Amino acid sequence: MSILLKSEAGHRYISTSLNASNLRAIPAWNAPEIRRGPLSNGGSSAVPSTNGPIDDAGRKIAREEPSFITNGASYVNRQTHWIDAAQGNERLAKRIAKHLVELGVVNVWFKLNDPSNLVNLDPMLHSAMNKFAMIAVTPSLESLDELTRLLIGENQVWQQLLDRGTDYIRLFSVMRSAFENTTYELIILHPTHFLPRQTVLPVYSETDGTPTLYQVAPDGVLRQSPATVESPRLPPFSFNSRYRGGKFDSLNPLLVAMAAQIKFRRYERSGWPPLEEHTRLLMDRTAALVAAIYWKPALRVHSTTRISHATQSGETDELAAGAGDSTRSSRSKDVPLEDEGSDSSDYDEITMDQMMDMMSGPNGEMLSLAAAR
Image 1: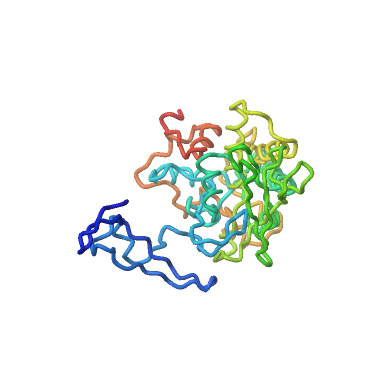
Image 2: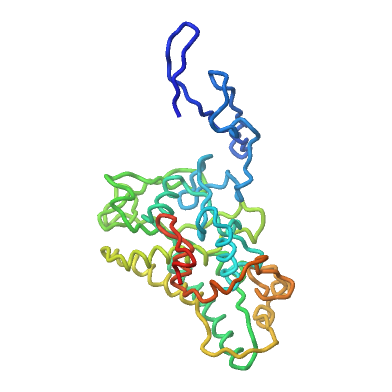
């Protein structure tokens, strides 16, 4: 915020009551730590924390991790959630996390700020995706098919075991190749708003950092500049996990697909123009994958027996013991999932559509539990 100051000589000039934030050193960039000096008027900043210690406590992934989609490196890249709750609503965040655990798509200690639910994004892409829902990211067609086959296989085992009187918890492990080898595609939902007037989006090579420029073509697809309907479209891209602390911190593609499906459903029910053929196919396949995530067996038979499909199918006991992504039952006695003093009954009956609406939205709005009922 600007202020008006007066020099010793009596001259008036404009300054600011804000001091810029200190910058953390990033050794990978050869970037030193930057600490700000005092304000020109000798006063205190309107944001006192800017002159204090550099605090990245709210950041769960490294700043040097490049932007997902573009591979651009910048200190101002935004840490971005795929599945999130209304800001400050910790109770809802815990309930959404618990719901994801019960679906079997995340590990039993999952929270919404888990690295598997986070990426760095260019600030423009962050706003375009999370605030304005102009874009979405979903697994590529090949990855969607592979992930859907994995889930359908788990669902078939679930149905068969329950039919035989054996209770079962689906176990989706990030150690499986379907997770490790996932590629992704960028979907433009509102092309004329996203990159108008032939504005370009640079996408940087992972090998030498060379940028390739992309524009929205007349068919609404992001294509190599100068973009025509014949230009190469932005190819599927991978997640670079080398900046993550461990293999279980890598990006979870099921969360990416669930976040995309929220935007796709809202787009389709809004009556906006149909998108081009490949995009519609991605949207349909994403819907099929998310339907498999939310699938429930036709017959439920209660039993005290619990079988791990990971162990049954010959995978290691380490997976069955919880080394993978949700490789332990969400109802194991040694895993406290209930919030202290909270009653989960007020959201157990929420429908799939209502829960998905609660998880995310174009403008960050959340349906309250009361409104969702």
